[in-house]
Amino acid sequence: MRLIQRLAIVLVGTLCAVAGLAIWFLVTGHFSATGVRVLGSTLVVSLCTVAGLVGATVLDRPGARCWLGAVTLILAAAEAGLALGAIWSVLSTTALWLRGLGAIGALGIGCAHACVMLGRLRRSDGGIVRRLSQASVAFAMLGALLVAGGFVFAARTVGGDFWRLLGVLAVLSTLATLLAPIVRRLGHRLPPMHCA
Image (cartoon, rainbow, N blue to C red):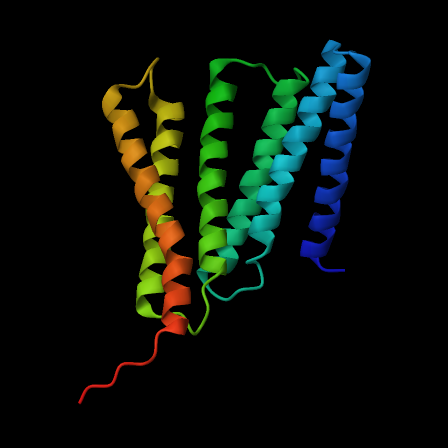
């Protein structure tokens, strides 16, 4: 069984466990501290498994995409470990751990987005689709680095310029992410142009 299939099975199991626990807590009204920790743990494991699964989808691709998948898996595992340690109070919930949790989470989201965008590239994709995908990854990674830097280096609060820049990067990444498949579809439907 391939790694992706195993991760998919783990994902299905953890999502079912989260749903079952959530329903049990809602129906019984039992929200003890341990119950909330169990629910939080299963949610963290589910989200990190999704990120790891996204990283695993590009592990068999050549070049940098393979390394990107491995980094995404490592970040997802580190995020799960830190989050579970914080939830169960194994790790101190000091600002240092929470900053690390936020920084690793931001970088993990950026890497997972890059895996999705670069993993979807096809040999038949034209230059515009490739540049849009690369732009989407670049803007998302810049946003992830900005957020990670904010978690690591910000003393207390970040100013309005931080949020404006993050907003611009998010809009540009979203635009490029949405345009890439649209341009791909349009490219397949348009007849070839011939110069007379």
